[in-house]
Image 1 (cartoon, rainbow, N blue to C red):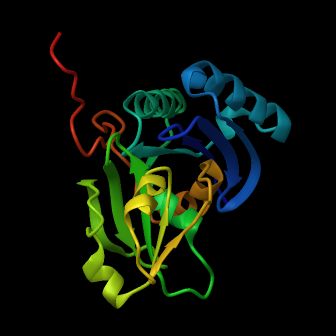
Image 2: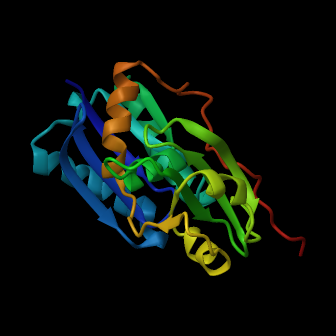
Length: 221
């Protein structure tokens, strides 16, 4: 069994939790987007107090690597790297869209899973997975036009989720389209992080960077 700290600051607010391998021990979350950094470190400290676990008992840190908020991704990855470096433990990075798909899974369903992260205007970061989280369409940036998934929807039901799916709902009309209101948190990382740890799927602590999918754009002043 491995004590793994999970950190998610990729999309909305921030959340952390502790798990013993794939068993949740304690969670914490906030919806305050502008206070992720300060909240994150205080909450991690409180988790240790709540569980009675010493920080040097951690055996890995898992973090959502992106896509997502540029600032949020940097906050989460920096914290995760700092802890891993200080303790000499492995870093586990998990694609944000995969975590969102894990949260939207429906037992017994054969529907595909399509998490969407709002990337402003009619653009989203998205991917498609099956119920076993096998990648059907890799993560990408996509401009929604109402017909993007027509070929998939003709063959399969698709469960759309995430904050990007709200605007997708306004331009889509198809009998095979379903929408999930599930909110993804660090708790949804537990099973994935446990599996990654057992498979020793660790990230390079020195060179790992956030997965932005597309580069940050700042208009000229």
